[in-house]
Image (cartoon, rainbow, N blue to C red; front, side, top):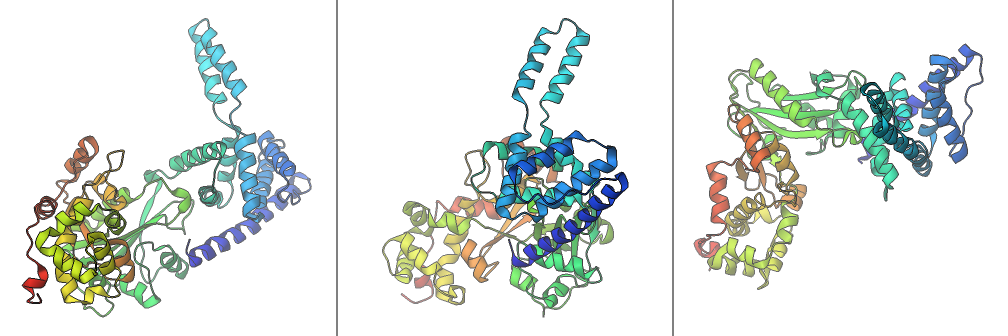
Length: 486
């Protein structure tokens, strides 16, 4: 987690602890009780406090007092204390198996329809663990939903989780999935005039292309740029996901050019293409609850209404797993992609007769994109290999590239593979500088989605199909000979 992001979350939790302490003390005075004293990480005291929350003695005010006290206790624990807290909730407030077995037996013995329906209801209640009631009590507190999102982030960070903790995670994810249904979400445009606290969060949460300065952010919010974010009514100041868009002419194929602060602005009214160049999910505690598809479709609809000249919607996306895949490629795959004529040049540049070793030596060379000889030697083979990369599947039949899985599932088409689309140090390290464009053609999205989901078909442009096919038919001339260097 980024340091600035950690600071933001810590500040939020610190403020929340104070708010809940005030709620607990106010509620205690209202009902004439002493507020809950600190229990620290003592397991017996924690279990007792959780049990009291479930007993719900004293009505709604008392329940709020106890829930606020329990939440305040969690916030003030260190990492090991939070693990113990979560383990107690997961293990001591799980489903009562004896009760479930009794309910199943009662269902099997039900003599009539009335008794059977009652037994089904009893079985349903028996399979709901008490910890679900504990979790839902926080929903009634200020910032309670945000607290549960951060609690799940803590849970996901735990190493060597037990099956009980996995069960707690499943319960918490189920609650959050229902509470964060896309029907509850609002789409808002973030501008330079948005509150500074929100702009600070955009900088901290940007997960694809680091925002280097306030000037960089201002450039991304200029007149030919758009930034849209999704918000939940219970977390109105906290973006759940956001997308950064550039309004341009033609499909952009290089991220450095797109983000150049000195580049001339494009008149938004003259733009014909919207490039989605960064999509960030901001809340780790909502991992597995996807907002991206909904976000893209909402933004496409909004831009289509505001700027009718825009007819092309595409991404400029990273290829995060390409270099790792390339480093594990069998030598015969690399040899085939380069072809006999080009292999001599690669081996000369890399100083080895082993294709894998030579390629690795070239790609780890500092600032190799500035060397015309190396670029000429690598360009066509790496583009072909990247085409092959997108055909690789996991055991479940899905593409190995995570960004491809997201956009192809959404109905996009793999349009271009971009040579040196990102020649930053990060881009070279993760993908040898390659980027790709996924195109969202409005009249093809549904058909592409159905073909991908039902048959695993990947929608590709003719250009990409040719690259994939030519990977096994390389007859490239020796690039060094073509440059007159051999």
